Length: 174
Ligand SMILES: C[S@@+](CC[C@H](N)C(=O)[O-])C[C@H]1O[C@@H](n2cnc3c(N)ncnc32)[C@H](O)[C@@H]1O
Image (cartoon, rainbow, N blue to C red; front, side, top):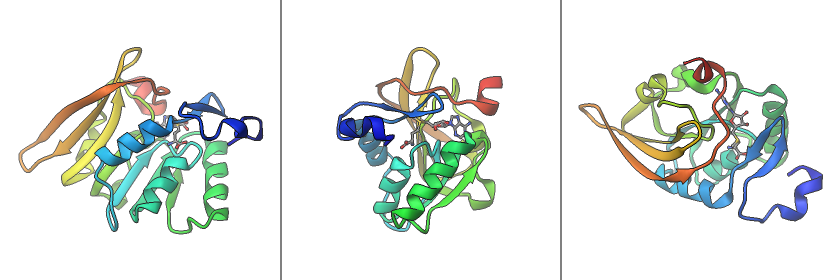
């Protein structure tokens, strides 16, 4: 947490982390992690490293975590914080997460922490069969969705209304 907000670190709210971005509400981090069915040895892709908090939660559950952040200073700060706190095995990249991390695919789970207007097809394609993507979708009215890749296609379920920062980069140009 930025030093000025540390007193609020345990509040169940989203909080500002600079660069017009937020650390997600802890309840929503928990709900998304649970819905993604993350566990030891699972390959998990996160879009939107932000503070690195969700990255650390995924790593604590024993997952092999890949995380992409588009805002370079945030990505660098999260990398330094995660290294300092002993999360040596997470794979971090600065760039546009819309296209995913094809060289590391397929993933058992994809956790997206910024909202595109539509579900990015490259991310669907990087899910393993049986894999689950948890993603906020929409502009002003957003819903959290779970997309499961099946042998024959995809199954999409809606969880609840959410309010995430917009996905930037290619998603904003769609
Ligand atoms: C809600 S915030 C961060 C939440 C983060 N998981 C955490 O625990 O702090 C969403 C993040 O997604 C990033 N983001 C937005 N669009 C992106 C994109 N196309 N690719 C990668 N990251 C993106 C933002 O810069 C921001 O840091």
